[in-house]
Length: 117
Image (cartoon, rainbow, N blue to C red; front, side):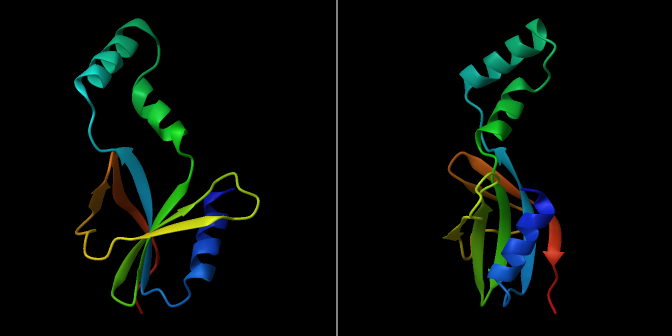
């Protein structure tokens, strides 16, 4: 699924949303072992940021922040699901500013796809 298709799904699913942002997902914290592995990968292979790339491939979902009725909803659209599965998690009051950390993932606002009216 292309990002444009995922955006259409989210806009259609949340027509009452005041704002919708596409999000970039990154790993929030790296353990010492992961940092050492990253250094070894960098020194002994042609791969730069090998663990970051592996982390990106571990979850191919497309993420959005939907602001609707004074709620903030973290929405994930499955990238390879033919039925356009949408998962959501209410995170009201937790996404402050440009980033939000949940578990091992950090989400950063990437682009506003629906503006406040």
